[in-house]
Length: 193
Image (cartoon, rainbow, N blue to C red; front, side, top):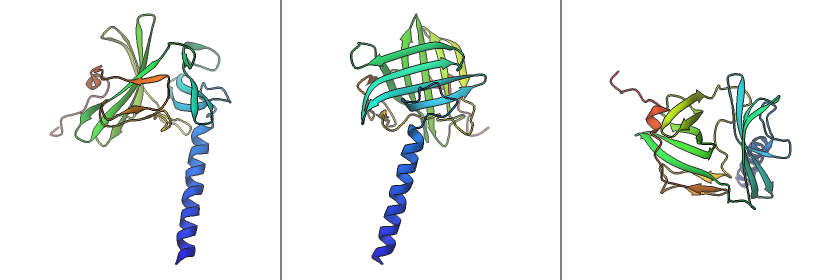
């Protein structure tokens, strides 16, 4: 029945359009400006972390990391087309059924590491860690809420199960094969316990 197939296709297109529109609208708790697209956002207790993009159509012109509150952003980092500033990203296997996607930048001797765990063995979904060298200064877990976006937008990168299988889609992002010791941020319990 061709009309059923057409109706199903139309419903799928409408659902995808709605999902993309929702992905692009900045939730009220995000630290993104109204003109920016949310690439990642979550609350961390009283504070929030947001990764925002300025775009010309599908082209990302700038990526901005913001941490703090609407009353005061404590940490901000921006990479644009015209600067040498860049974000880095990787994917690391965590367990047979899980991997961790990470995005970071370095500033003032610190590494700010956003992460998202995908798969069935994840102890939690996403978070923000701050490192000084290899020492973990802070490790905060995203608090799930109605308007969080604690995942990396598909227009930012295609993440595989590891760095070799991943590809950056934004010019301000480079894929690197770096190991931060994801087990420190996502401790997986032994299956026997």
